[in-house]
Length: 258
Picture 1 (tube, rainbow, N blue to C red):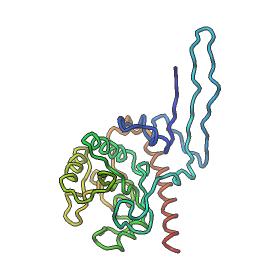
Picture 2: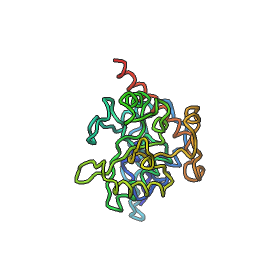
Picture 3: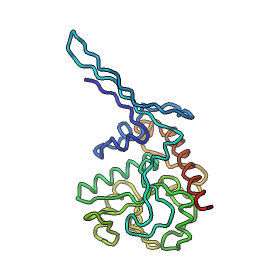
């Protein structure tokens, strides 16, 4: 029996388990190294199974799932203010991990899985953050951020905010629990906001491999270990991500102008 699956940019995250995080079976499959067309939407194609009468072996049809490169950004999950018990402003928070840089996304998936092995459930509070959302936080005061728009790793898909969930409630003030989560993330090569003093931000994890905000603003991304082996389509993936980020920027900026 043969089944071929081509996982799309969004469908892959929903279908893949936390048990494996290589690009080969996650959001950005190695065989998806085609130039992204300006617009295409291909629905799943399921043909009638063919019976080989000589061997009586069922040959499964091919299932093809493709991606809408124009409106796919609209499928990203998001949360509204106070979803996790805190005032996070009026603009929606993007919570979709597919909005992150592919390598960093896989580090976070691994962190979530390793914490789950320890009995810790993590929720994604915010992944990619628009300039408009960053400006909203800046205007809310230093307890939210001291970074203006364009100076946060969130604007480059290289930062995420998480929170542990205990009995269906977000727990922000359990220092011992945060330390377990933070140390687990640091072992994966992530920078943990729980080490910071101002602001102390234990739910924050980022990865930039030493690149400064100035370099990120200039369009640079950190080098990825084993890129050719694990992320052969990285350039195409980042190009599509930038396109989706721009769409979210336009959408949220238009809200702030109203």
